[in-house]
Image 1 (cartoon, rainbow, N blue to C red):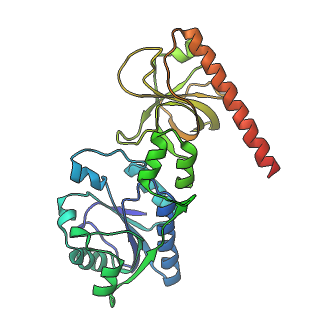
Image 2: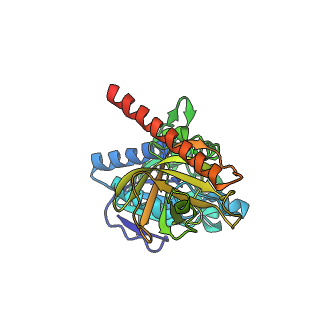
Image 3: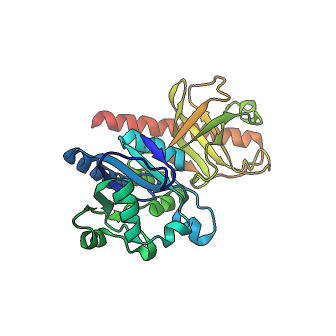
Length: 315
């Protein structure tokens, strides 16, 4: 997949099927649109192109940096894995906000990206005053472009959206978030040195430094997770919080006790996929109380995994 980061850098020689959006999280709704783009491209012998943004549109209007379900590097890797040919990543800024839809279509879609098919989600609008849409393309560019609308995706009659997924995660409801994502929500980063307190109480942990500082973080607490490291895939208990019992140092910590694994992985990459929230973060009066609680968390996790295994065998 080839990536471009500005209008002027785009160099595409073949006709394309294109779609536009923030695509934060690449949830089921996004995947439905992108699969539509892939299908149209395959049927018509076209290349595929995604136009997306390096920052959330809300950043521009609020002046605040919004956390993302899938920061840029994760999104680029995911789009490449889906088989997209080209991705244009633009800053969502005043230029984009003030750019008339007609210019966006003529100068970017038609001239630079060589688009002949435009596939958009049911509520997608672009250009100044949100003028660009499926109906606008059909009315103003019917001879140059075919505009194709993709219907909404729902889970249990609720429209799938990035904001709804964030709501579920902020409430610790990983199962509902994962259902809308179509996969487990994940965070990734590098294993760094911690204060070794976990090892001192018999539960060594891998401390993570996140890849991106604008990554959305679920509700603080202890989670059962799937852990991906160089040595393989394991289950683990991940604590996301401020370490209220151990110390009062700064910032949120992400540390994972990997079940059945105790090797030196400092400096290695680690990916944590969330399965289920076990409990909220809380302060204990002693290390012994904390140790007892972690033992109880482990027992809960093992029982949960055993029940999942039994259920999968029955099905």
